[in-house]
Image (cartoon, rainbow, N blue to C red; front, side):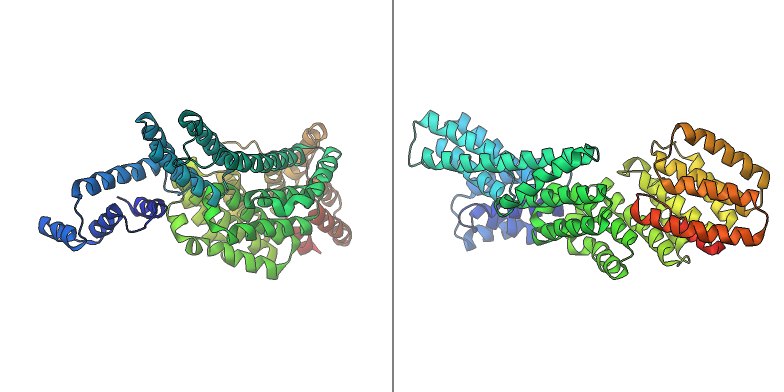
Length: 473
C-alpha cells in the first residue's frame, strides 16, 4: 500500500466504534514489522488474545481492498472518496438482508458527510435511510426515528436552497453586464442575514461573490479583502480544502495578482510568503496533489515572481525564473491548467528585458512565443503586438514603426482592444515618430505618463507600460 492509502485506511477506520478493533490492531502490527515471519504473526494473536483469526484477516483484506478502490483515481483524500466505500458496503449488506449492518454503514457515511459539509451526498444518505425504514417497517433497534430523519432532511433542504441561490448569484455576477451585476449583488447583500447559518463552503462562496463584484467594479481593495476572507476560512478548516482544491489555489492566484496591482508591498510579501509555504503547511495534501494542480501552483509562483520584479524594478532574477517556467512547460505542457500563465511569463520576461535594454533577449523571448500554439486570449496577443512595436522603436527601425502602427490602427479600429492602455501606447509611439525634437518628446512622455498610471490603476491590464514611459522622462 502507498503512504496515501495507509493514511486513508487509518482515517477511514477511526469512525468505527472502538478504535482498537482487531483488524485495526492487525493492520498496525503488519505495517510496523520490517520482515515478515510466521512465528512473529502467531505471537501477535497470542499477545492480543484474538481467537477469531480468520475473521480478522478477512475483515482486514476487505477494508484494504475498499481503501485501494477509493483512492484509485488520484491521492487527494476527499469526502466523496471516504464515503464511497460505506455506500458500496451498504448496498452489499442490503442485498444480503443484513439491515442492521447496512444502516450502520449509512451512519458512518453521514458522520463523514457532516464533517466535510457535503450536503449533496448527505441528502442522498437521508434518502437511503428513509428507504431502509420503508423496507423494515421501522425497526427501532436498527433505525433512528423517521421524524428525526425528516427534521434533518428539512434543515438540509434549506441549506441546499442557500447554496443554489449563491451559485446562481455568482453566475449572474460573473457573466453579467455592468447593469445586471448590480441587481445580482443586491440579492447577495440580502443574504448577509443568513451568513451565520451558512455552511463553511457557502461562506467561502459568498466571499467569492463579493470578490467578483468588486473586481468587476474595479474596486480592487475591497475585492482583495473578500478573497483574504475566503482564504482564511479555508485555512481555518483545512480538512475542506481537498474538496475544493482547484478553487482554493485559484483564490490564492487572484489574491497575489490583485495585491501586486494595489502596490501594497507589506501585504504582498505577507501573503506571498504564506503562498510559498503551502506545500509545507499542507504537506500530506500536496504530496497527493494531482500533477496538473501541482504544476499550476509552481507556474503561479513563477508568474508572480516576474510581476513582482517588474513592479519593484528588481530584474536580476528574471532569467532564472523564466528558465524554471520553461523547464516546467517543456516537460508538462499538456498538464498546465491554464497555459495563459506560461505565455504571460514569457511576455513579462520580454518586457523586463526591454526595460533593462537587453533587446536581443527580449526579441528572443517574443520569438519563442511565436513558436507556441496560438492563444485565444486577445488581451495577451494585443500586448505582444505592442511589445514588438516598442522593440522596433527602441532599435531605431523607424520605417517599420510607422507601417506597424498604421497596420494596428486599421486592425483595432474594427476590433477595439479591451485595454485602453494599448491604444494610448499606439498613439504615443505614432506621435513620437512624427516629432523629432527631443524637448517635444520629453513633454509628450510627461503628459502621457500620468494618464497611463491612472489607466493601469483602474482597469484590467497585463503589462505596466508606465514603467517604459517613466524611463523616457
